[in-house]
Image: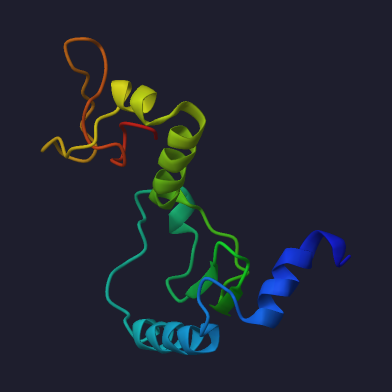
Length: 139
């Protein structure tokens, strides 16, 4: 069980993590969590059926650093629908798998100025605007 985690364990014992003062970092995350949890403005997006099922009282934060440090607070075990939260991940996977040049042949890097849900293709049949908008780019 230790074999696969030996590098992580060595880093832990030597305090050589990406965030060396992780306890202080987590304290700040918890303070932010507590502050934001008090905000009850806004509403659940009822126009998206899957999101309409969720309670607005659910609130959680979970994080994992690139070197394996983890922390969770609140309702972090509650499954949820990613919706637009997944777009930066999709973009990163596309860049990793196909490379920046190939991805940006089809998907641009600049805002288009169009509404978030406007369908649009350029003269060549591609889309060259913001990759993280609702119905475009990598989504």
